[in-house]
Image 1: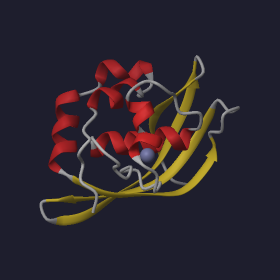
Image 2 (image 1 turned 90 degrees about the vertical axis):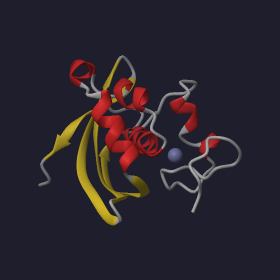
Image 3 (image 1 turned 60 degrees about the horizontal axis):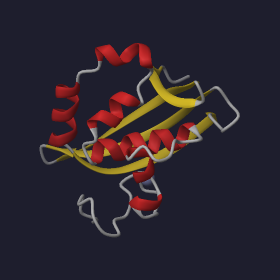
Image 4 (image 1 turned 90 degrees about the horizontal axis):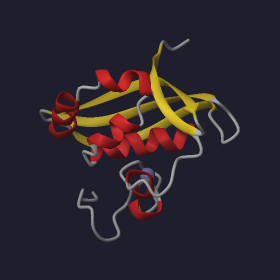
Length: 139
Ligand SMILES: [Zn+2]
């Protein structure tokens, strides 16, 4: 299992199979922006795994950023061991779109038990940049 060290050739926590440096790191470092909603989804999962809390706030829909609880999010991210992400479905969210949804399952160990968080996430674009808006009810 890859360690969450941030140096060297580390496999990206998002499960793409790519090196972190070639996958989510450029997004986390602010040197590139996700072109597709799925890329933002993956990079937000990686941000949980690597406890990049500022990134989670910055990629939240601007209207919701003032309500972002960095302390609670940091605590939750740190207490869990993030062990895998599966993208189950995507709808729109491509470079030319303005909105998109991603259905995913994130697995994590908490208190010695394997849990999973399944969510249909809504993403929207503003000023050419993708943001996570909210969880939608699954149809
Ligand atoms: Zn990645």
